[in-house]
Length: 530
Image 1 (cartoon, rainbow, N blue to C red):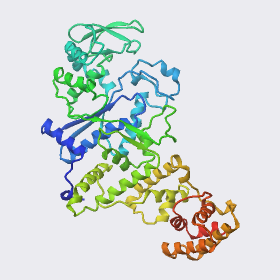
Image 2 (image 1 turned 135 degrees about the horizontal axis):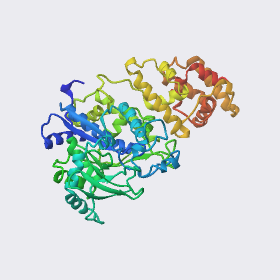
Image 3 (image 1 turned 60 degrees about the horizontal axis):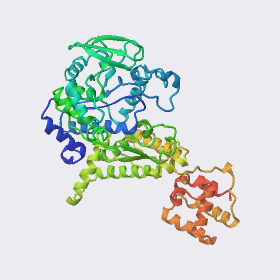
Image 4 (image 1 turned 120 degrees about the vertical axis):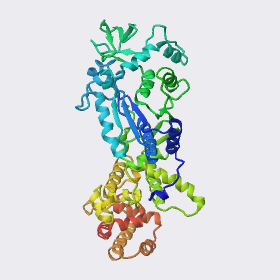
């Protein structure tokens, strides 16, 4: 679609982009930020923040602005709890209260448990078109790159204590310090700051090993800022213009409220433009994504059942402050159908002025749903229900499905294969039992049925030899009903008998279309057994 016909958008990402430009003014580079502690699997709820930022980044870039999109791994946080279903728990227990960047990777062979979680997400994000600049906070803290930020916090500790106490029921004591320390002897944060020399020197004692010493902020790797102070400090260091936060952080008196005060009053930085995003629930997760064992649903899990464009569509098509569910039940089919509909409509702009606003809204959602550039023409489409039928007929052989269809363009072949893999995974893992089927073979033999039903099935088999594939579906349908009446059968019992002969079940896909897809040779062979 050419630039002249690109719609004016009231999409939430565009509204946010306009707000950033308006409130921050014209800049050479706008900084948009996101981040998380890699203390466990980065789940699909965490992904909501990442893609929300990326959608705003796209909106800014669509306006010709240069954007720096940073993603911070808060891997210098404390390892507080061992996640469920982790191996070698006794080993991991010895690393509690240490930085998560020191926790060994007991799941693979990365440098640490934190690195494992980081690399797992970094590997999959490009599949959905997200490639931020990664910042590893452990590296920065250990290299004392935040020494000045920590000194500023220490210089203003009374101000920060006042800001935090305004939203606390248990007040911070007068001897509280706005830094935490990992003991240089045992690496744990079981420490107490005992004093400061008024400059860069900080003294502490460790309650675990008894170590006591004074360290220099400019030379030590032991100190870091607590979350509520670290956040506004990094806004200042990185010059962050936009960063959203979950509704827990945006609640009254939450970490965003205090960070705003600290950012302005201590670090002299105007807090970033922000918005609140809500939770993502999981619907229909009783299959292989079961949560009874404490497992969470990751982006990789979701991509097993949804192609990347459809994953983006789920988030681009929902306002961030609205809670919604990722479905794994039959809703999956509807979500694919909804996406396909807005894709078709994108390439069919209406002339009716009354319909143009709806088209513009959906068109922008479609644009933001694409992993890369928006296709210049309508991509190849296949109804998801039809695709699941074909895959079951061909036992998941995607090449066989492509061969049967015969019209998948080379340019769309990889996208088709991704959709087919998702559809096949869904059939195997989450489709209801009455949705699944497998085609019987001649070697399976006959299914027991009454003689009159067997006779009707046999007659339909003869009809298939002579007519299936040669006649239009409607004409063949009339002949099929003639067979049913010839044998004095009700449609329900006739159809059940045919399904039993073909797939060994009482029900299946729409029979007429199913017969044509299965084909003359297979249908006549199976029905000819009777």
